[in-house]
Length: 334
Image (cartoon, rainbow, N blue to C red; front, side, top):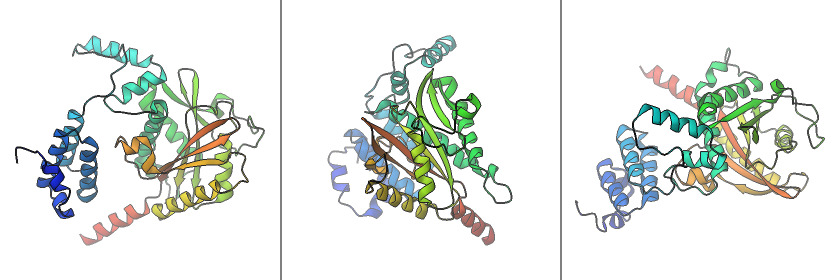
């Protein structure tokens, strides 16, 4: 077994149970690494994770892949250092704070191949933030009832700024606090009257972040919130975000219905911001490259005027009904 040779090619024809045996999988992943088949190695680790959960053994295997993968992107000039000197590290962090959006993205994706740098970086930052909101959202429930839409928007803004303002100079702002929110948007269409968020890098506006709390797929309300994104003067930014706070019992079913709703919109010609392309989760670059693994995310491309606009749709389960039922069942067994 020390000589991998064509071992992994033979293994691909073996039964599924063979692949899910951790001791066998360890050899197969090592063989993939030796042959530079990093995507296959990641795919097998993800399958094992779905089967066993993220164990310490799988974390170790994932680190082995990341350590061996040939770097395809260097750090931007000014943030490279090979010293463990504290002052050198502080200087590198200061330089990172002054980078352009492209160099900031290169720093974030160091060692990973990414084509759409800025858009992918923004998506990763938002996915990381919404993942935190999913973890902490129970703190906003009182007597089993969800908080207001604005409360979840505020939570996103606080968590985003806490993580990314100092390092990457990305800041999420609340337009109602800045005094720039109006009932009438740039395109003369009506605002829906809730907290408006947008992301800045230095002083440049990068993305609109529109939040909506739902208990079901309400077509008219969703169209109103999506359409609101197109009312801003910086709509030419690389990507915008619709964050859906789903207060529902069955998140999987709701996500399927939401995707069906988007498909229906694509086939419709009634809207001025027509969907020209649906991009499912599996075709999003950071998901394909195993950089992020969130389940409830997709993208839409819109032909708006003389430009194409990208919107990332992220759904957060703020009720977590299945998880609470499972936890209750476990407690009852004790």
